[in-house]
Length: 139
Image (cartoon, rainbow, N blue to C red; front, top):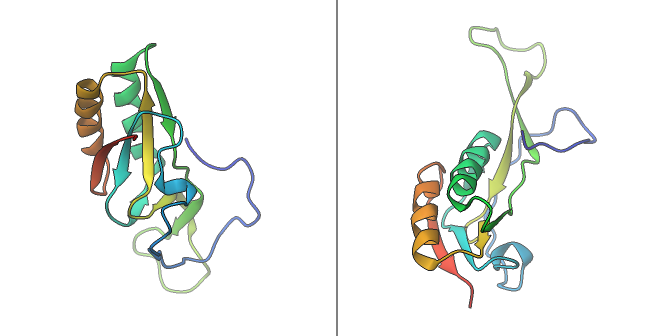
C-alpha cells in the first residue's frame, strides 16, 4: 500500500482539514508532466485502496503505450478503537492511512494517449473516488 517508509510519530493528532484557496502557481494545482489530468473539485480524504483501484483501471487500459503519474500520497494516519470498548484507556490502534485532497488539486496525470480514450478512462476512474473530479487537458 501507499504509506511513508518512516515517520516521526506513530500516532498523530487528528487535525481539521482546511481548504485554503491557493495561488495558481502552487505545485499541486497545475499539470506538470502529463497531457491530461484528473482534478478534484472538492475537499476530502482518499485512502490507499482507492488510489490503487484507480491505478489498476488506468494501467489496464493504457498498457505499455501511455504513462501514468500519481500526484497524491498517503501521509496522514487514522486510528480507531474496536466496537464496544469503554471510554478512556488511550488512543486506538493504527487503522488506515489517508491523503488529504484540496479542491483544485491534480490527482492523476496521463500522457501519450488520445483525448477520447483519456476522457473515458478518467470517467471510469472518477467512479472509484469519494470526491468530485473533473477531466482537464494541459494548455
